[in-house]
Length: 165
Ligand code: IDP
Ligand code: MG
Image (cartoon, rainbow, N blue to C red; front, side, top):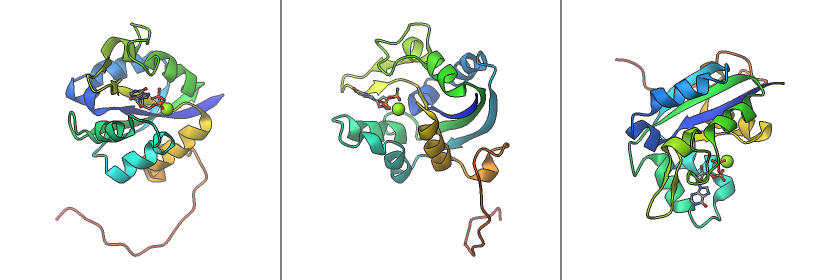
């Protein structure tokens, strides 16, 4: 089944100059990258992204981690598209806990657990189609993705925006 999945190279991945390595590993999947950008993650975006985890003891640190407070204040967000995209990407990422992850997976090779107990595991990947849809819509606008993934609508709005001077 053709699917799409959200991938984030987290702030530890960017700080450790792992972008190239991670993208190379992901290219093994033969999936297509259909959207990509560098994002400075706001608290609002971080909290929406990890809304399901808000009762976990590590939630506060997780929000700080994804906002880049421990590393660099940026994340690389991508959408991968193709056959069985969700599981293919998750397989290369490895388990959530970097110490338990297969050593040749991205998380097993590059992740660590901090002394505070945060799993700094370099990469995020959606877990299922429903989560992928929620997350892609959170991180990307329709025009930022080069294929039509979900239905869209045209809205007319008068907004002030920053433009090149
Ligand atoms: P996933 O990223 O493999 O889907 P989730 O359970 O959705 O795992 O957790 C989101 C992120 O929260 C993880 O990638 C990891 O950075 C962090 N995390 C998850 N569980 C723990 C934990 O038990 N301790 C510390 N950090 C955790
Ligand atoms: Mg998850």
